[in-house]
Length: 102
Figure (cartoon, rainbow, N blue to C red):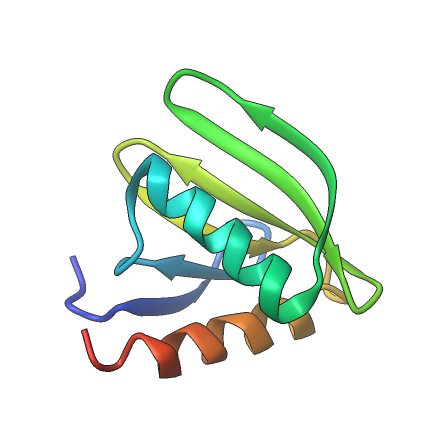
């Protein structure tokens, strides 16, 4: 387990995934949605909430991506295409910068 607040990696589909370690849990998911609404004017395209997982399809700057919560792994922002990697990287770097103080 990394001690970083934000971890960038490639998922099995070779697309960018950003784990937001400092903002975990179900409530953390809601905080991340609110942050992205405020800072990136995201549009919620679709949302699925289960008993121990959530997956919301989002759109910002014309690019689609997902915010996922999976118990016990936490929250992650995931590109759903190569085109969506730009916004995922932008949000991930912004969060990394904002969470440095934690």
